[in-house]
Amino acid sequence: MSAPSDRDQYSTLEVAADADVVRQGKYPEVVPPSIPETYGYYAPSKAEQTAQAAQNAQIPPSTAAQSHLPPTAHSYATYPEVVDANAAAGGTKKAICGIRPRYFWIALGAAVLVVIGVVVGAVVGSMKHGATNSASTPSADEGGQTSGNNGTGSTGTTGSAKLTLYNDTRLASANFTDAYGNDNFLLIYQLSDASICMSAFNSSTNEWVASTVVNGTEGIKLGTSLAIDTFWQGTNSPDINLYYQSNGSAATLESLSYSSSNAISTTSETPSDKWSSVDATSGFNSLPGSSLASYGKQCEFCNQYAYFFWQGQQGMYMAQVSGDTITNADLIDVSIAPSTNTSIAITFSGTLTGDGQAILRRSINLFYRSTTSGLVQLRIGNGQNVPSYVGRDIGPQTNFAVFSTGFNESDSDNPNPLGFQVLSIDPDVDDGIQSTYLKDGQWTAATDAVDDLADCQAKAMMAANTGRRLYCLVDSGGDAGVEIIEWAWQGDPSDTDTYMDWEKVGAVTIGV
Image 1: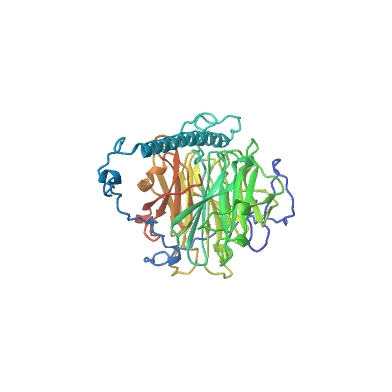
Image 2: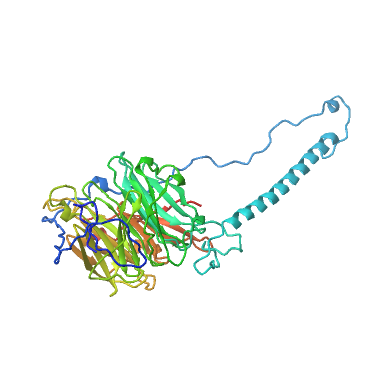
């Protein structure tokens, strides 16, 4: 497949003959160039470079507001002792425990009624709790069986599993800056009943808000791959696109969109009925273990359209998303083939100016593992697909995340030159989280592990966004299951000595 050209609304795609894909719509036939022009990375000519621009500055970790209530003191009665009026007059009355018999028996009866009410309430509440949990049992997997711990990380009795974060959930993240200059982070994950949820963060409140996107009863694959992107709409709220796999051996791909006109909120719960189904008219299928990735327009002069990527029987596929419809699926023709069920991570190379050469500087950047074990960058744009090995070999189960910094500008005094940060975790090799980065147009595979991210090793599941935030699935310890931990990159793009610096922000609030 030839890559999309921004000069035409449609991708210049060579249509693949895949039996899984029924294509509709008419894309223009294009003959790709026999010798594609290689993109150039523009490195600064100066030794000194200024720090990243203010709009890319790091948000300090949020600090929860602390209440300063004084400790509760023990309270003792200081009321005056009651003296019976008859006794004061010299009369004597019978008493039980110092209380007149009539009042003693009234108090005793009231106490008995309270105890009975508490017992009855506890029994009824327990019965309702059991019924609710029975309805929340996770969906069976493709073989018709559920895991012994119901995917929660803790053992539960049949029909009584607690709804929680799925123990092997995939993760996907995106970010945007709103009209008020606030940074917004979106994180997608799956619960143990197969529901897909989204947690959203706004820097103006420093709080996460969790919402259900789609209920687990909708035929979602437990353990589905996930992808999410934002589509820039200027000062308006962005469009949001989300992708996942349905249950079954065919792993049909599903897509939802949240329109800019609905103005997605990151400070309050997002209504699930505002998500609209995207009509994939050809009923796209993926490999059951395929990763998913997606891109939406990120800035005024970035790649202009929305694209979706996945892996099928013949290789890597790409589709253009137009509004509420996906009408075509096309095989990406590359000289460095991806390995089966490789992890896929995506970011972009942006440009600040819309001059005649902008189309050469901007690109979509897809990262995957090749059939020869190499970590590969695939640059897509201007009608070309340009794969290149970035200098690191990785295992077949390696998961990776990526984000870009700066802009690909040709000006010699560009203060924010383009850079990429790729993090990889191989669960089969105990060598920690590895860093591979692009600086000044050159790729480097760091030899030391990123010690700050050691907690990410065990589950080997992570996602990143261009807000320089990383999210890892982490064991909570014991039978507590798993949680999602957020880290903020503290690196300075101009100083490689800081590339390994990450600050742990804390646990993400999830929708359970």
